[in-house]
Length: 340
Ligand SMILES: [Zn+2]
Image (cartoon, rainbow, N blue to C red):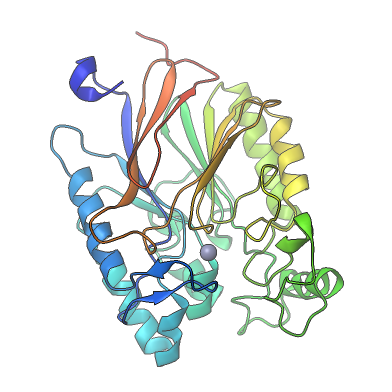
């Protein structure tokens, strides 16, 4: 259903983008050397997406940025270069103001700056600057908000248990937990080397991370209330939590099974939107009906294409219209929007 043909107005419209990975440097490749990374041009593609979202006929109410806004290459120039790259990459989002952008934390963001910076940045941590009603608010990089009475967004911090971003907080228990997990499951000195691992064990790399028990308890509480209030929930996360269709799992959250089991308890969840795995993929879980989507990365998108999506909430469906490399989806709502 398109706006042009439907003649109807959606209840709400929002934008989705993943893995901009901006850096002011020449094009390069991914670690396998098979795919080109367009470090400077990613900014142009982001600007094109944002110009589309500014269209007066169908402006977005908010944007979901799924993580890795700046590339790890920036840190070669130190924190000054990282901050400069971040402010350049944030500029297009700021041009949407007062329309807010909700950011997700990614590994490349943490290669540049510590999580304490993101936590205390009113731009990067939406709970500091936007009206997000759920505790525990600013103490964390996970959050939830309700942009429409029938639509809730729940953002996960999949690097809360991580070996990244804790340089200035070496005593943090989540950093210690990550170190012991990665030691136990990977064991190599180079903790991004997974060549010796097989199947789903290939998730045990430092560029992935996990969700703490405290975050899981919070998630359970949020989903419990959302189910009682009949709100449709979209989970946003940098790392995918479902890798069942893959024969490897290099981009999978460490405690994926725990999170999936929790989601399965609550019928309110309709979709999971992730970034991180740049090619993009999707999987409709036949047991829960949850649509998992990994959004293709802008950084590996050719300059004459793009990779973003515009979502619309209708009476009975959430449609995600993909542009460039992103496919389109129609997701049935668990709780229809009542027509009053
Ligand atoms: Zn990533």
